[in-house]
Image (cartoon, rainbow, N blue to C red):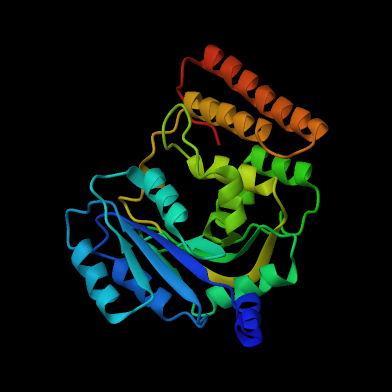
Length: 291
């Protein structure tokens, strides 16, 4: 290997944009336009269309014919959003990767800014930016998840993710850039006893135990909620959140966290499960969702 090539691979690692799509003809062009406009020159755009029944396959084929860095995974059957995401990570070639959800748009400097943040912090596992949220009615809101940024203690990061406080916006880092070794260690986004319900939380919880999260304080991601968005249409119940907590306990137990950290985090989630169960018994089964 030449010295120039070796330097290039160190300074400009290959990044994979993971694009899981399904019936996205109304907005996927904006997502693809934002990806092909990235200033980072070493970018693979990997698309897994989940057997869309609209014009999505035609649109992504059109873009792939015009852009050599786009690669499409063929699907024989619908995998669901979780299976689609896991298969994309398995087939990604990049040293770093990020989810480019089909209704999100990223700024041209998104990849370059987040790569630089990870390169400056070799122990960090993920870098993310601030986010502008666009609701179905067109209103916008600036969101950030600043308090977890740079936290050195794996136990404290895990506790912050486990608490799931609404003001914390725990889901924002899932729009960030992460190292491939996170997928290799965790093995993908795990299902819980209710299937795909909020499974990205379990994924981020385990990832938070692997290394620090780094926030880039710029609005580089634009999240558009659609009326058909999966997370909007989830039926939320206390029972589902208790199942999610049990899935979190399994991830913590299988992580590399030290024994005392595992004891603390698992104990906290068990406490939440017991408290939720008592509330449900008093109020009636699953009458109101939890945060």
